[in-house]
Image 1 (cartoon, one colour):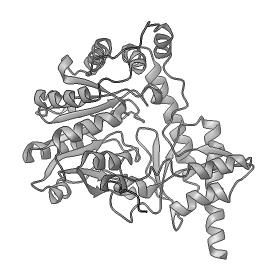
Image 2 (image 1 turned 180 degrees about the vertical axis):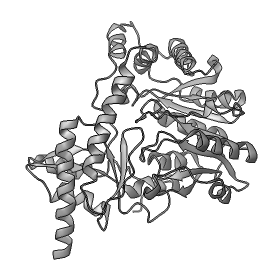
Image 3 (image 1 turned 30 degrees about the horizontal axis):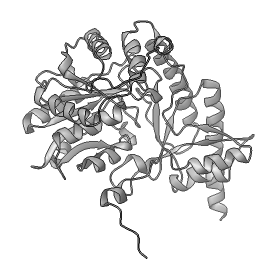
Image 4 (image 1 turned 120 degrees about the horizontal axis):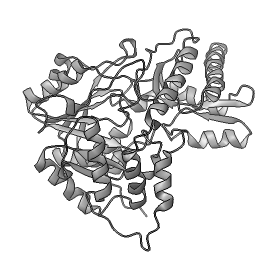
Length: 403
């Protein structure tokens, strides 16, 4: 007897390239191998203390429904935070979401109909693929390359992709997985295209403060003439090391757009109450927490980048921000290599789990020699992890020549 079929959407949505190797990692741990997780952007830094303190002090008799747009205390904290960045916002410019993931989905659904197109430089955060499929829209990639540090595409490259179905350009700076930080000229390039072709810009700015070597990230709200076109995606997950709180937001000064986003928010009732308690305290915190985190990630970046240079044939520009390096390594197939590192290799009792590059592309066949390294471990652990990665690449290639 045949079973009922699934939706085409369910069949198309991809497995997470970041998580799909988990069974192999679990088996390695059962064999007694220590696995260093460089595959997922889960910071090991302590969650911001003021957020945890607010959570401890939160003692309601009932955890009830909140406002669909987010609790007023969090909205006020967000407005003050953006005010410190130089951006004036009103409460109706902000809708709190269940993580940055829901924020991106709400934005896509608010401005895109079925099969509308969103232009995006690739490689990009892998879950954009899933968000696009569930939203019914289509990502149109423009390929960038490790040799030039995954820089923003040119005007000509963007305009080659613009069609009557194009609704928006998506940018992410500082970037996941590339670590690239767009310059003001690059952000103005994107904004100029949006103005010329009547498009939105969805700007994912969750790593805003994590820039290195004196660089500063330029947000889309800093570009003139974008009030009706700019959509900012934000989240507390990485900035405050609070991934599990699941609090993000959509920000725009386009009132009809935000009214539509609010209707989507009403359909799912409200964002998590406990996470909002943490977020309100975090956004109100004016200690050195973020700056100390940034300096720590820069130290970790330096460890990873220095060790990467030991690999003959590697291609990697020095990451400028976030806490990722996307690295082109000299192996025949990174999917096979990543699995082999967990099933067949260890050095001194440890190995590494990395995220294979193909999952960060929309174009089939790309990323087959690239891996994403998330430097979310302390420097000592990163040294051991890079020992294993460097030795693993050498052993894998030696094995390949002997087969």
